[in-house]
Image 1 (cartoon, rainbow, N blue to C red):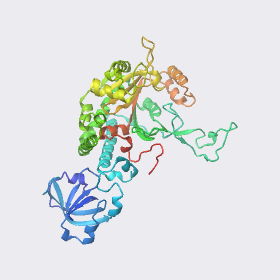
Image 2: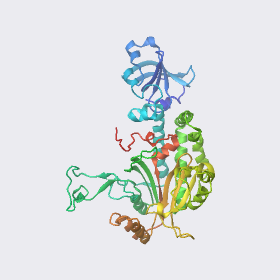
Image 3: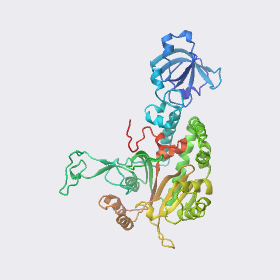
Image 4: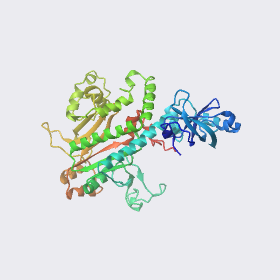
Length: 482
């Protein structure tokens, strides 16, 4: 049995075929628009009403599941190349029209907020069907790229006793009775009585463990769920999301940039080639949405142009220090149009600054590198102080149009003494990460890696503006529905 995506590419034939799917519309008791989730496009199935029982016709409603048999013919009407001349219709499952009217399955435009409230049904709408097909293609492309490049996938722990980012915003995991936990003599929860005999959390990153595997396998990548107990109700944050994190032995920062640029171009190109209809639909959707916005809030360029922009341009590599000088002397900064004015070296760049560099100043994707050590994580390789005594680390961020930072990475600190001192300076307990530190004693070499939040990649490729709309069931503060 063929799926509709394949049927729509086929030539007319007298060979009978069977198709199953859900009804999107039924016009004039004659034209069924059928969709099985394999494509944004519907298959038009033409029936002769006099050849079918009245109860069958009355059951062909929006959202009902049907099986049809017939042969493919050249379409007589506009809107499709071929259609199915149907000889048999079988109702597989009914859908009450009154119930359908109360849901996002009803054939009308729905607000994204409404769709989130019915996340179990929204994948059957055009928008979310398209987004999730693109998401699936990007996921496949990630694995395809790394496998073709000779990487090994490492399955890093989801339950962990370490905080890779040193941020402390982690979800605790415990089997202790929350109403009556065992206590120490000081009156604190006695985690030695817990399942792991210590505090445990859901992982915020697989990076540290992946580094250890890069030291044995050479080049590895992780692709798994990560969790942040960050109380951020924004369009860019989730409490549960998926991360892609390659780690490569013997790669310095320049090689890390090369890898990240090549990887990003590969997966975007794969999606454009394999999800053309979905991306075209999402571009039209974005254009219609932009018409309702003020000019300043609209997308800087059409969706497909934005994706081609990334593919066609070499990523410009710019030091943080140079970027600060550019921003400090920019017209928006001098005219106080930035929400966060740039006035001194050491400031953490905001999305508005990153987008200015990409969209206005350089007009191409940008890789910023060599950030101040004070605003970056403990594991990043420390540079020698510059002429003014400022300390930087070999960090890099990739900036894209319309989104700002999409990738963050660094050359990792391979020197035992330097890493130990940095952990001490940042109050990271040595006993928690003894194994990570000890790894620097046994043939520690230059190595690098980066992290990409998968949902942000999906946002960029689909043009969706809220991260809650590119993951099946978003987890955010106050929301663990479904």
